[in-house]
Image (cartoon, rainbow, N blue to C red):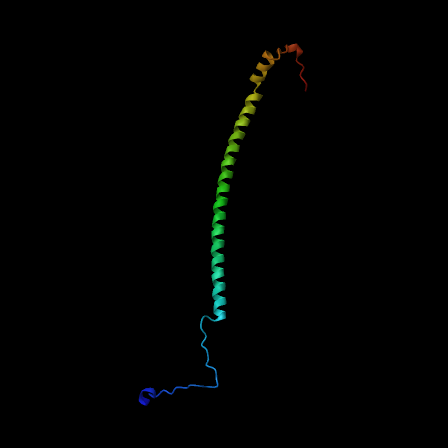
Length: 114
């Protein structure tokens, strides 16, 4: 029995020193660095997604503004054409003769101002 226990190994049953504990787990500076890196990665990803959403949203706004601009340009053209037709001399003469019962002046009634 003594041969089996003493194969070059002596057992210490009692010592005055407390046994040293090995550090189990991750060191605090590494954990802080990893947490900060992870936080920056997540923050950067969220910022990237937010910026892409903003670009898409602004694209829709630009598209709507261009459509509205085209519609306003067309409305402006129609209104200018309507204003020109309402100003036409033939139309004014017709309204003056038919509705207002006006007649054309005789040549001696016309006074030319210079």
